Image (cartoon, rainbow, N blue to C red; front, side):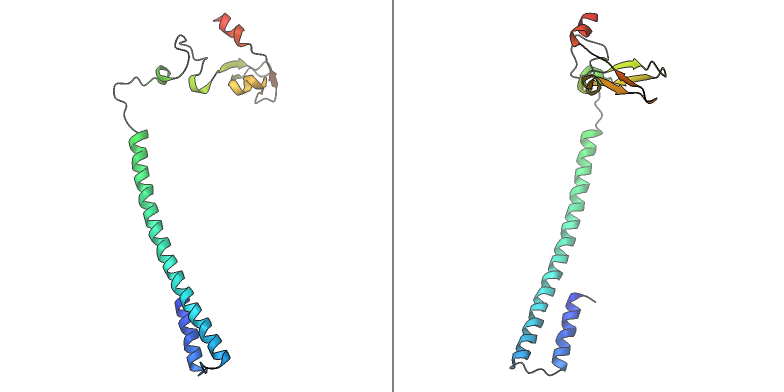
Length: 150
């Protein structure tokens, strides 16, 4: 039963009781029912508005998906597929160690298990990394030494 139907039911009950609309109690009950009727109308209007907003939001979401598809799935035509040609790495360096947007990356071998571990700039800054075998690998990295060794 909707809110409007419940208010209509209460209005019918009040009329069925033959309440005197001139008495204090009758005036109060009549005012309460009228207020409930206004609230029920407002609730119905809010429900309709929320459904309309939901439909508009779905349309905007669909439009955004179309825009994302145009932007992110675009074929870049003649451009080289190799991302390294477009990164922010040092123009004089053709190695993978500079990492471009990802920052400095190095590969080390765990002395305990022999696993190859790639370490990123955050791990280098921290000065250690934990291997999957549980070994804590500590290291020092001096950028001046790295530049001189190249």
